[in-house]
Length: 98
Length: 95
Length: 96
Image (cartoon, rainbow over all chains, first blue to last red):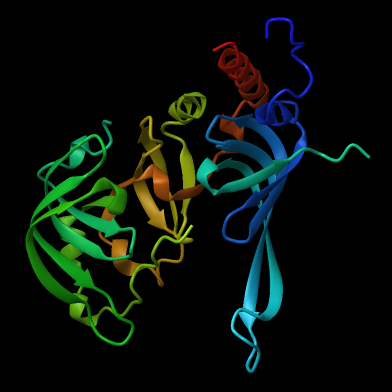
């Protein structure tokens, strides 16, 4: 382990470490997702992000439509500096390199 | 775990994770934020009726069940006419 | 421990705590503990008309496990310092 270079992805959290100070995509429980600049994280996937845009997917039931189906509406919100509790985090995705 | 320290022997409002609200005197707590309330009553909110108060007496609530503990300002609380207050119950915690 | 330390530096700052039932409570951060339980003073419930339950409550203890977000004052957060501290903690974690 001592010779492993500090860069490069050896384990999942390395991927998040290399995304520090970059814009990341975060998928959360409750049909929520965030994009924002990542500044801090810990082993629980608690995050601190800035310049965050939150998108909430809300399914509005339509009369006559089967249970669980309806019109999906996206509600967006902007937040300057945000702590995100790790228990709601499903995935953290680094910025696309394209 | 200093956070509940100041609330001992004070009248508090307890909101549970399922949305129930209970008021009572905070008799004690532990490091997992389980609490014991004395002289407690549940306040049952409803959109089309006033608040119903159900006496519970001495009550222990496990920490996992707690959403929030608030210190009640007695003066402010007396100003509220619970029988005239209409409100949906507090929304339970989902995620 | 890192996030706990960050919150400790934010005591006496105005924050907005959003719970997992969408309830938003704004107030002055008085203390946090290792579980990220939060003590708020001078609280104000957003959309109080819908949530009159806490009208007589001026300060409260919020259980860490019910928190979804905490909105922080941008000016009180040194992002460079945060990133350095996070990298340092990640290194220490790897050594163990």
